[in-house]
Length: 422
Image (cartoon, rainbow, N blue to C red; front, side, top):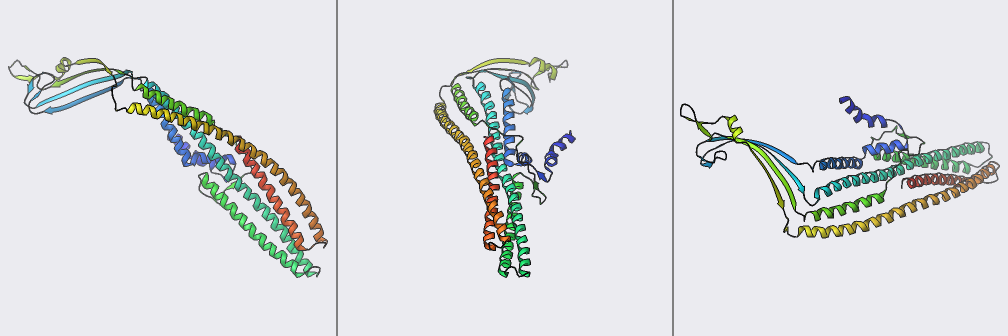
């Protein structure tokens, strides 16, 4: 059993103790380590225990007790019905049971309510999982985008370094001016600065992602190219609204049930012992009857029914019924509002996917155009037809278009995954 516990405790560590993380790995880790998800699990466990506990509420209650004590001074002995004035030892043993036969179906409604509470908590937990999944998705894609930007900046710097070497060579051969070499060196410094900035952005996004998924930040943490969900989270929020309304209706019925009479059946058995219960011994002295004899003689049984009719309770029940009516109306309005919001969210997500597809199409066309311009500018610059400033403008425009293309691709990925979740 101890071995099983150890495996369960350390399983998350074994599962996520890796350097290359997929999107699904990050989400699974967050679902295990996120405090809000842990609280949701606790709430669901409590609700499950309430359901199990309520299933026993229809059974009769059974209680047992035993007492042992002494009495000094005048009192009536319950077993002899006579006054006792000396110190008297007494014992009492009994079992009692009570069963509610009818109470306006309050227990029945309570059973339904705790079951609905469990379903509501489960639905809320799924909603939290969905929201956390989207949050992790955004952080993961941001980190992947920053990786792409770092790669792009590195390529940008490589182009510039090649131009610096070329400018130095042409200057040494006196085929170019010192100014072009200085401009290319200045551009190299600027590209190095932008690369460092993009590397810092990547480190920051990876750091924030690790905090979000609940692991200790590690410099070796890296991401794979897998951007897909194996365990997709789908939530029917409309069903959640139905559950809330049903619960409120049951609460109203339960409160109305408190107007009904309550019928209970009670029973008990018991016995006792008293030192005051004495008999005359053969030698003429008064001594207490033996313990076993008294237990047999004092054995009693009782069964009785109770009818309780509510007459007046300070109009609290009436007020609660009216409050419940208003609560029911409020839930109805909230459900309509949530349903409309959910419908709008689904439409917005679909529209966002369509918009991002169009944006990606134009980004691809723009990239292709600036790529051709840059290739042409590179050829003209090599042949001396344009100066370095014109070449630099075309190069910057080309890399900007490539950056926009990469961002458009990631925006579409995010929109498509979010749309699939809702």
